[in-house]
Length: 95
Image: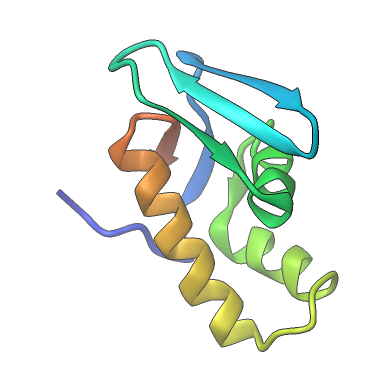
């Protein structure tokens, strides 16, 4: 298993269903039956994964919206994406 890097591109998995419920986004992987809810920032990232995007571009866009250092954002985004990948909710396209 490889680690996700800033050079990789990520996109929602076609087998992952999502719905807006109140203030959060609920995800369910059809492949493995995993499900969970996302907070505001997680939901923002999920919306940005509708189309394939590089991790570097994603982190840059988030850095312009949130008050945190680029390094902190990249660290948190990589951890979040890895959690989604382990649940088969995103696809990682090697950069």
